[in-house]
Image 1 (cartoon, rainbow, N blue to C red):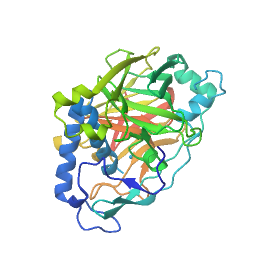
Image 2 (tube, rainbow, N blue to C red):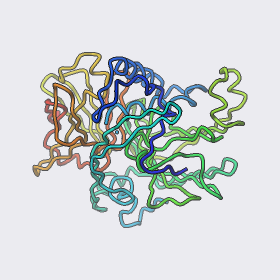
Image 3 (cartoon, rainbow, N blue to C red):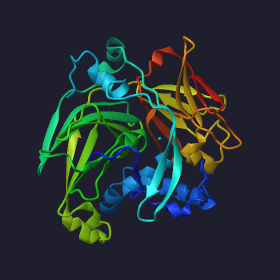
Amino acid sequence: MKQEQGYIDLAAIDISIEDFDAFHEKHEFSQKYQEDKLRMLKEYRKNIGQTTKRNVLKVAAAAAIVFISAPVLANAASDGAFFNRLWGTLGKKNIETHDEIVYDAEKDTSCIITYPKQEFVDIDANKAEELIGNAVSYEPVIREFGDIKLTILTAVSDGNAAVIEFTLEKEGGVDVLEYSQLDNETKGAWFSEDADFYMQFKDGSEKIYVDMEKSTNDMIYCYDYIARKSYNTGTTELIMEVYQYAVPRKELFDMEDAEIGKHISMEEISIPTRTLLQNVEYVNPDGGKISISPISLKIDMNTGLGLSEEDAYDPYHAYFVAVQYKDGTDYIVHEHELENVHACDIEIDNASYICGDEQNNLLFVFNRLVDINNIESITVNETQYQLK
């Protein structure tokens, strides 16, 4: 269901708007908010990949916290259209930093959130084919669930992250998914509480980007950027879990687990994949490691960044992440201000998805393809990493 531009629904966010300090043009979060945020982050990471009946209902609420608090039909012969839609400029547009009002109609309160700048780049089809072509599966999977038709079109994985393209169809309008341009800029699309349908990637966490240009009322095109829980296990298996409910999802929230089970049916869908993309390891002077592929970057936040255990757990303390190429150009993956630590004129978020795990690894799923053969170095905060 397409949402109105400029409106952000707080219904899925578990931290109350009442936990904010007094509202200012540039909002400062209270100590209680910061404590609640850390608690929610820990709960969210603990629940990633641990599928329970209640997690299926609640995990989206925790996912929203990360992005609010850290301002965040495939065709192999399509002349690069596939690559350019998932990692390029087709169906996407550059976004300048801007302010939006976060409004809670029930409490009649609001605050201003500053959205970061986002940039997308064109992709050369031949280069994209060279970087990931052998790893992309174009074998479609089609399932029907009542009046909803799900088609998984393409998939690619590097073991740490995965990217899947799929469509949802429903005659008369696809009403199970809530989405907007602002959702694309932050937490991604989310499944309506009024829907009797839900789907998620097993053993991971994800952000669904809806192609607003290509989608129609009866068919929406989605690009799913996924952080895998079982980092780099060597498996290419991707499993999608699809849930159907006998009642709208919102009616299940207050039920006991034993009662919930009576109203849920689930089907696992195996998503065809090919070989894993190559990951290359870089290290900092203290031995801290990062792993990079053409589609993602995984950072060990524990070593070489000078962070406390608590700060290493919080994605907000990765305030600057950039890839330096051999030709002297940079890909700034992410940059934001951190009080008394880092200042910048413009905050930038050029990641499709950001997610941490319980071991303090932080994963960035890129919004473009990275040529891992032409990297000079990688910088995280003030620390530089070189090829191992």
